[in-house]
View: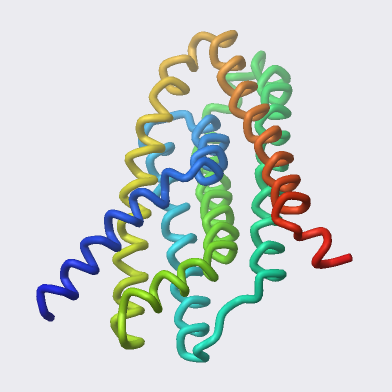
Length: 224
């Protein structure tokens, strides 16, 4: 492997870290991290998001590269629109979780054995969120890859390195964002305020995201 290709892969890794820190990615995973009871659970939520994101980017990206094709603007924007729907869902779910916590508060000791089951749900959600973001970003990823490398195997390697960077970036972010949620767990008022803020931010940003795609980027006019 020559120096030029190594430089390209290094750039892919850095771009992957940067990609993980895009607003819609951070907000989506923050709603999951806010439900974590331990810091390592928040960290793993980020890792699973990165795995899901990389998996769909890789599969869809390689198919499109082999077909020497790209996703049309109409479908690219439509897939992005689903990200907005998901953000609204995650935000509302996070805010509703406060009510569930209040109902179970008197029976805290009776539910101490539940965390393992909750962990599975958390990671499952993170994986699905990553899948959705990966599909939505596959069109842009293919354009970036095809303009950077010259063969299919280089493209596959580039997407994988990009994915490793994305996992690393999200691991760092979810670990940092998880700290205030973990520290506030014993302070119910602070904990609820943080979760409510995260949920409201996700919901508002989700609606803005859909409006921007539908009106400003012309998605609604493409479908109507």
